[in-house]
Image (cartoon, rainbow, N blue to C red):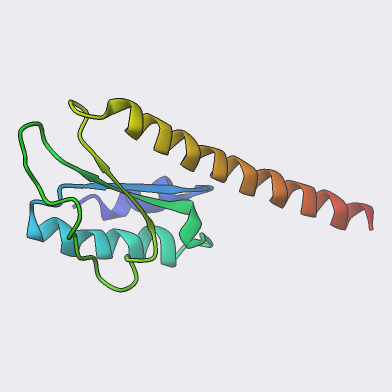
Length: 117
């Protein structure tokens, strides 16, 4: 229902974080649509996308056997449970954020070199 706002969200984006509940089968289908719209239809690489399978407190979800559709299984996936491992989630997000900054810096450096040359 908010699709008309999506172009504003996508404008000048450098990365996409998709958070979903792996316990809901509908979410596994929805993330395919989000990936298609926000990553594949934009000039973004797969390395600029982070999937976060968020487990609610008390869920004993299976973190080892999560099956994703073929375009999604090559993306970086982290499992989060903020009660059990908040520091791990923070560290993974920091790594992802650093990779986005590195891509931006490399892109800027290439652009500057093309202007100089």
